[in-house]
Length: 281
Ligand SMILES: Cc1cc2nc3c(=O)[nH]c(=O)nc-3n(C[C@H](O)[C@H](O)[C@H](O)COP(=O)(O)OP(=O)(O)OC[C@H]3O[C@@H](n4cnc5c(N)ncnc54)[C@H](O)[C@@H]3O)c2cc1C
Image 1 (tube, rainbow, N blue to C red):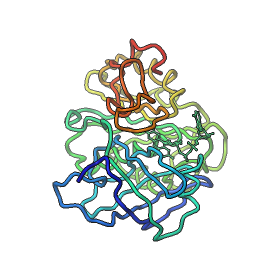
Image 2 (cartoon, helix red, strand yellow; image 1 turned 120 degrees about the horizontal axis):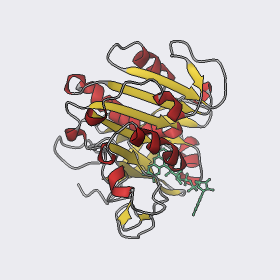
Image 3 (spheres, protein in one colour; image 1 turned 60 degrees about the vertical axis):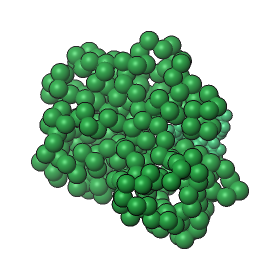
């Protein structure tokens, strides 16, 4: 299957997560063979191009676990033409997807490491995909920590799943919100603080810790320095960069970051690859 060609898919399920964000499960019309390249076969951190007829195409991160049945989970916030058209669509409506594109999180290098996941806002979407992959083979990894910040308790995505995570003994979960409010039942304290504050008092062994960061691009300037101060090497800080993309395939140069292209060299980069590029963060 050619990843640059759109594949038809139908909306199989819609789960509303907040007032403007929903989890869409798409079902490819053509179920892919196990080893066939397909938009349903991906690495956490990669993205696909989603198109809705009459609205256009937009890059969206994979949010679920790679499936063998041709289903794809995407967590989508209503932002503009394409995403609004999807939010207005109904179960069974047709869309098209092409991908996967880009480099995701280098999971094969994470075995035996402690993983510190830090998500801000919609950054929880790609990190959920990584988290599901880590939990699928939990025994392969060391300490697992998720720090997640949102605007308010009601803006936290995947609240039911967070409650399940909070009850696990093999994962530490800390939450931060910008605006005070009632924390949903089953969740740890929703601390009114910025995401970096959740690092306070956290036990981190810098040499064996890999950090996966996903958040609004502006947040990285505040997230990376405290990690470096804790002695985590720049090559062990992996972050997903979001730039406005056009082709998604390295042809148009729209998403250039210095000499790198976000769509084909990223969107997941080690901080060591970005730290000398002015304006990268
Ligand atoms: C790698 C990657 C992964 C992503 N993953 C997700 C995801 O998982 N979920 C998700 O919801 N979103 C994700 N996004 C963001 C999503 O692709 C954008 O929000 C996209 O613009 C939505 O398309 P749209 O047609 O709905 O919105 P658009 O019509 O493109 O508008 C989106 C917003 O951008 C503004 N805008 C439009 N054109 C420009 C321009 N030229 N310059 C600056 N601002 C402009 C609009 O005013 C509006 O506020 C991802 C983006 C990237 C690059």
